[in-house]
Amino acid sequence: MLAKLTGKNQITLPKALVAPLGAVEYFDVQAEKNRLVLTPVRINAADRVRDRLAGLALSGKDIADAVAWARRPKK
Image (cartoon, rainbow, N blue to C red):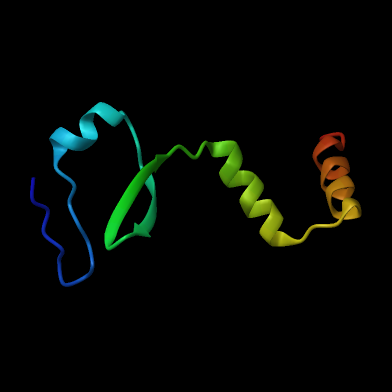
């Protein structure tokens, strides 16, 4: 099957090839011996939250303060 590379470096994968993979949104892309190899990657919501939190460089005190704020009595 052919897939065309657009001017924006985008490729539409043939439906017949991706349908058996299920609901895959992301692929790991590797170049091997002049070929591109796509491997389906399933990223769940918890992984995205962990990645976002890791990027914020929060301290233990920041987290404790946030938990205390969330557990405070409502007025």
